[in-house]
Length: 511
Figure (cartoon, one colour):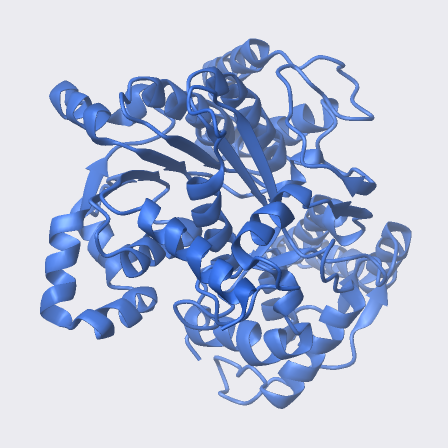
């Protein structure tokens, strides 16, 4: 056995052993990344002590039902169930996985039982905050409550944990906005705004006040819930752009990071900044995913014949990373990010993406979609016949997009409007639906524009140093390594055609 192989195994073993006897508190527990993380820990370290999963109860489901239906009974946990057998798997879940009723947007994380809170504070070794709303145009009050104040509430909760060793925050690499060139792994500081901001200082208390006053005014003016919803979405985009961010999601995630920075005086903080997260690369099995993310929405719309063009710079880099690689980096970062002097604490930031190590162009992904859907067409839900996709038109600028809409859609809308008027509004619903579709396309184009024309590359020197610790002298982590988060392993054409797109079809579209 080579020396670097021994070093690799030794470091990996050390990381796995770190989690033995540990108690981990996880927020956003029903989300994609949190589930992959929970499954990984239970499979990697069977002697982990406890996983406390913060789950919001709903009107229809208790937290126990949500844990059962949305977490442990998903396909994701099938490998662990098969390894342990049904009886031992159920016993492991009962003894080690504890659902906790709560909500990060509330004080004390919405955990109302004070005695239970005290018990948690004495037990928790590690906190993983992966709670987030990821909609680009989420209502400002909702996004601010979860992404920004949620991070603050987690930090306040963490200050009471007497044996806490690490607080890990899952953020996004796009907190940098639309930065160009090589983007470093540096922290965001309180009050900071981005280039092009019309407001040069971010006052978080002022933002809270604006949200409160806007809601009060809208309700006093007897706005309907639907009208309030639209107004609060528009407010989020407006406030984000005024401060230099392109949308509400990345703006509020950036505020969340700022609110965490001061915690490094109390304990170690890791901020994981993934890029666009895709389906699992290899663990617990290839292709597992949930829901439709940025790229996946385009894939499905194109596959169903609803998208006739691709908007974006064909030469721009689409920075994507499989979900299990993000989780492997989280696991390594928790175990290894600490000073040799245990009395000192620090803030560690890791970009987890592919643009620096193994970039893939937008044009390549577009043609891989076409190739997959030509060989594996989606089926029309009405007729049951395969949907044949055509060669996609590429619109490589916003002006070409607006010109395309003006040529292909607006004349039809104008004709439909005239016919509707002549028929005494008998076609009102048809016209309104068509109008909404065009308006929606224009709005989505504006929301996705920063990513479809993105000109940044995320530096990952800190993440690469983590990889070096694990791989010893190997040039790259091997595919079979249980903690592989090296994007250089990925053959993008094989991954997209044989893993990711198949995963969307199987686990999201249920084909």
